[in-house]
Image (cartoon, rainbow, N blue to C red; front, side, top):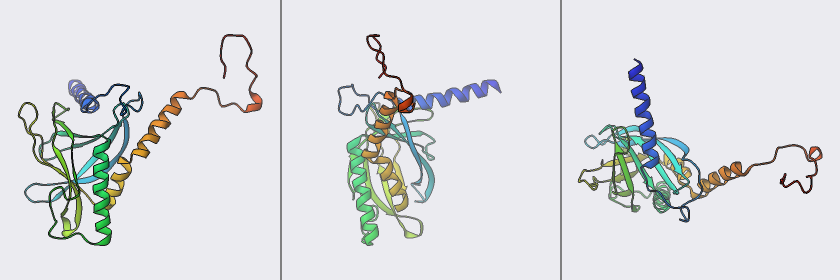
Length: 235
């Protein structure tokens, strides 16, 4: 029993470490370097994935992890078809492309101008090349598929925003999983919040402020005037 628990803990640790190294690294002078802070859990979104044969939606919990050192957002979930862990790595340009696609989908949804003819039309709302890492326990493989923004009529003929990609070979000729992530209009609004760059910058600002926090929170009348010529700065 102890051996099983130890192995389980080890596998979880490997999976977590893999998620933090699934995407590229940048140097401190790179404009994408926002701060020397560890990956930040932004939130979770209960969305869905579309099965390939029956075209049904299955629940999929998407975990959003932001990497301030690289300005990358990782979306992590378990692919129920292949049983792999999957990490979709989105830089700022990727996030902007997806956000623009979602906003266009929501606009047409609200105006009721979506059509049967455009159902499953590839890259209707844009596309972007991303880094996709996958593996049974950790990010052991990595490819660069094109992530498409489109929509599909699914349960009760309702339109869902789709993030989809085709199988793409990695450097060793192994195909990455073909994915179709389905988001309802309500889930799209949650996705927009998670991808919002201003919100992410505020998170980094908060981390920086907490790091720079120095003086104790005494009332002004309770603080002493700094002594002079001690060689120590009390301000």
